[in-house]
Amino acid sequence: MAVPKRRTSKSRRDKRRAHFKLKSPNLAECPQCHELKKPHQVCLNCGYYKGREVVEV
Image (cartoon, rainbow, N blue to C red; front, side, top):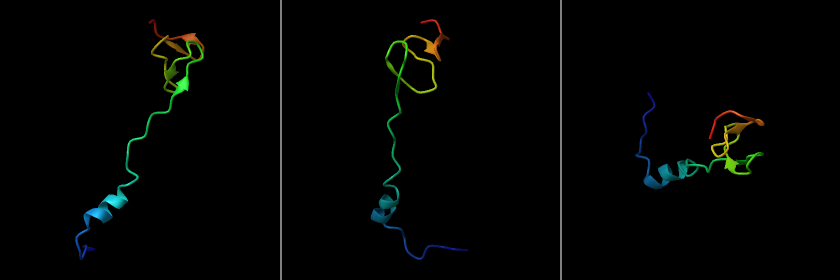
């Protein structure tokens, strides 16, 4: 079996994890009320999705 000969240092470990971070969510403008919302989701402000009311707000 492959076993590491030396312990991985903290700096080498952290360099590998440098790109492992949270990304800010993409937001799109609602065509009805012009609030920011997640794409492909019902607008939480007005309840519309794809031009028709889905949820009563």
